Image (cartoon, rainbow, N blue to C red):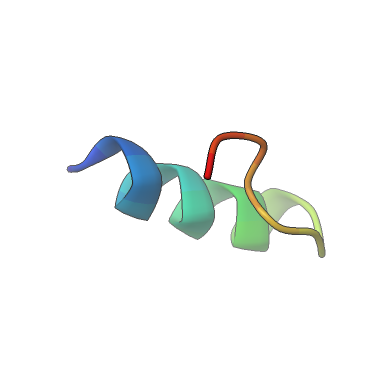
Length: 22
């Protein structure tokens, strides 16, 4: 998994907000 892609994925699943690291 990538950093941004993985981050966006888990963030979207755990919280309805954009990833902290963009």
